[in-house]
Image 1 (cartoon, rainbow, N blue to C red):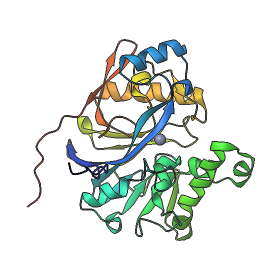
Image 2: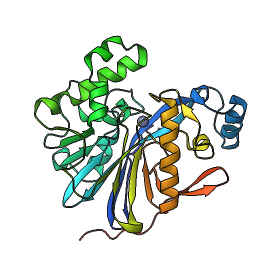
Image 3: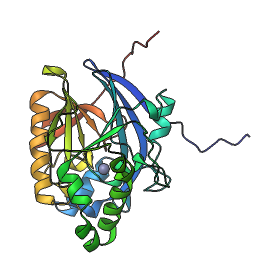
Image 4: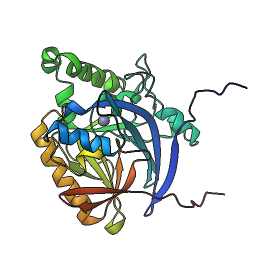
Length: 298
Ligand SMILES: [Zn+2]
């Protein structure tokens, strides 16, 4: 019998969410641990995982997804995946982008939700060359100031130190070339609203596109484990910079999204990470996007 290649195909899917063309780009998956989820008894958290046929011990996997948005004549990436920072199960976003027919030189702007390596690691190659030679990188000033602070980097240990170093490494060539926009308000991209979601990190930002009932929120890391944190939005995760503020931000954002019927583009929900939220009991349920015919250009 011929052997079958264990390789996966590059992952991308295109949708129109309202009038906004969005391409979901699959970067890979990262591990999370049940014991890193805080705010409910571990037995209850593990029962929710078991009910979803997920392992209660060891690594749970959560997808890493970035998005290409076509808005106002510009090609905008929202997050860049992990690049070479997190090992072989991640770092595939660029393959997905190329498979979708888009070259790195086509990208005009990059919106970074926050500077964890699964979101900004894909800005550079393993030797620090910029992957996107024309793009301007937009990140909230609070986020840049936190992770690039030299004293804080010096004091940090373990995973936190790695995050500081990866953030500096990823931003460096863009900053040197004058293509880093550390924004207070995102004036450079009219029609894109920033939602301050600080808590998970100091400048964790959501980006809201569109109008009226056709709005799409790219919410970054509002949810890491949809199995646990949608029914229990008060559950935090150890990687949150401030677990109390992260819960406050999540509760506010989930409430807005469900009340307004916004589309969500989520970094860590099952691929393609697009859908709606509806209220369910004390929490929320995920209504994933349905595939539909897409009219392709001639
Ligand atoms: Zn993340």
